[in-house]
Length: 286
Image (cartoon, rainbow, N blue to C red; front, side):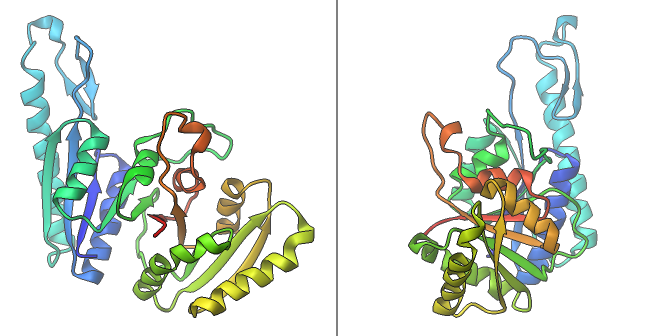
């Protein structure tokens, strides 16, 4: 993973993601691209705060003043972040990039043009009972990005996971995720690997446990910890199990579904990425 991308909106969560990206870059010798997208509002009147920056009221004769001011302030804040990185991670090459576009398309464009291997993105916490009828930028990124996405919600002082959680149903489709899983284990070779399946029926526990054990043996995974957790759904059970074992990293493959009826087909990975508490690594099945 030589090229890392960190989209930032200058929030605390995106700063946490930037810090984790710098830690990874120091470990891997990677370059970091820090991206901010100025998403111009489509409404005719622009005033107040946009992206955390106070803009003039256009009704006061400042029709053309807000965009230059916004860009100037954005570049100043980006420069501060790059300067901070040069102090904390002097060996890491950090490039800042400011684009004026729609956020989702700008991120995907940057992934392609900069040959990004991993996106590290901050996300706000949603409650477990909250229903997301409209996908957040993070959920859309998890679904559409061609590369792995690491979602970070809290500050992580030392991103060196000791307990990695891989959640799956361990059917034949799970074999497609082994390549990505091995890459994660190569990064953190001493970490325990919890192999989790969430089920509703206690009577299935023994059979599911045997299936998970066979999966680990078939692929020669290191330090496996097969686990079966009883809950109403994977999107509820995965975060709860993660807290129970104090997992440092969740690994969840995704189909990356698209389509008009997105809410009906939202993958478990998208939901977990914005609801679970440890950092979550999602990647598309091979």
